[in-house]
Length: 245
Image (cartoon, rainbow, N blue to C red):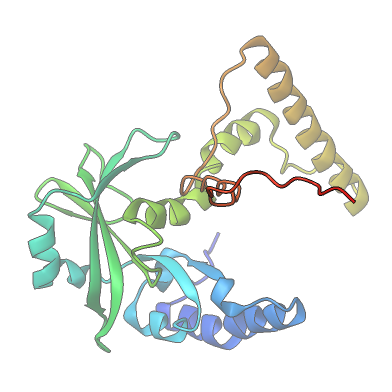
C-alpha cells in the first residue's frame, strides 16, 4: 500500500505561520486572553531558527533540531562544566544532565534564544531523538522563557510532560483496544469509547484500593508561603480605658 507523502519542513513552516498562529490569535482574542500568558509547545519538526522567528510574539518551548548549535563556542564551554540540573521522568529510566545556555544564536538569522542541552549515555539501540556523539546523546530544547522564572528542568518537563501520560495509556490501548470499531453508527462508537474509558478508570480505582501507592504530583515550583498577618507595632502606652462621665 503506498504511503502518503511526508510533509517537508517548508510545508510545516507555512502551515504554522499561515494557519496555526492566526488561529491561536483569534482564540486569544475571543476569550480575552493575554498573549503574554500563552505558552506554545511546538513539536520537534518546528525546532529551527526560521520557525522560531515567527513565534517570537509568544512564549514557547520546542525541541530543537539545529544541532549545529552544539558546535557553538559558548555551548561547548558550558558542556565542559558540571550540569545545572539532573532530570528523570517517572515513566523512563533515562537520566538527563541539563545544561542551560542563554543567548545562543540559532539558525541562519542568528537570533539569540535560550538553549537547554540535555545529555545522557547512548544505549545499544540508536536513540530516536537527538544526535549521538562519542557515546553521548545530545538533545536540544529552545525557549524564550526567562531563566529566573523557569529552570532548565522546568523547560524540559514542560515539553516532555505532554507525552508523559502516553506510556501509561499504552497499557489501556493494548488491553482494551478502544480504537477498534464496535458499532455501525457514530453514536454507538462514541458510546463504546466512553464505556471503555469508564471501565479502565474503574479498574485503576479498584486497583488503587488494593495497592494504595502514593499519587504522583507534578510541581514546577514550590508554593509560596502565605504572608504573616499584620500586627501593629508595639508601643510604650498603656491600653485605652473608658473615661467616666
